[in-house]
Image (cartoon, rainbow, N blue to C red; front, side, top):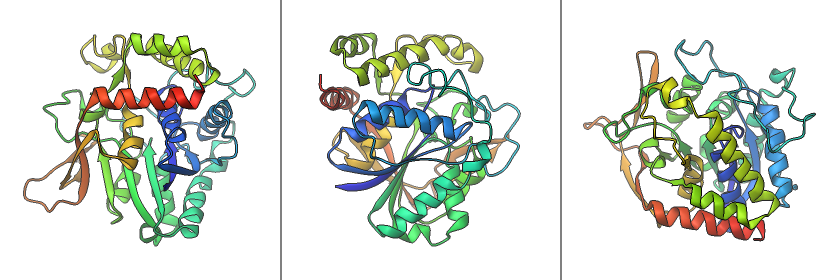
Length: 324
């Protein structure tokens, strides 16, 4: 069993909630805590606690962290600035809990300190899975430079290496661009990294048929998940036009970016993973992951996935977790 901390920007994007449920449903993982990041980390913590309650796992600690990046401002054309996109928490929280946090700076270092404490308590045993901005990890590295020596490995959802397979505008990559400085710190830290990039995560998604099957289970946890999926379908109706991608890309699909990162941390049966050279470069104000052909391999990279097998695994495990 692998000890993990899941660092997440759980909210309007339902794939964070889907990742959390996979982690909860996986006996390979022991969740030592959930940390939240970006825009309104305390509100995201409230969302995570509610989902844990629906799964009967309220004992897992949830720690709000940094809402703003280590360094401001972000590029002017960044489409996911440090603000809430959509109304985070609708379908999960009641109206009182939905209120945005007044003092978001109050928790800025809480998640970083929690990560350090857990790493110190379990040296060499703790793995980090990041499915949002890397600010909490960046802050933790600034506070405790010895941290990489205590961490077993880090799995990161983000980046684009194969731009032939993923031809969208570079700024569409959100997680690393939410905090370029933190991303640079994390990639330079020297700990073992597995990168799960968007050209692979966009291969896995649920369809309307999958959502209909989940709706028929009629269980509290999965009913909420389906509601979040449908909220996201509605809120992203104009997103393709906003960012200049094919209009049918989101049609009927619920992408599973973050659940695939959770899976990559615990198993590789349905993944192809290759050790590759990965560097971060800022080009036209956009932080990009590149793979220089003449550099030494330094990162484990997911390069392919058996999409049908992974989707089937996620559905099977979440159905069992929900008691359906």
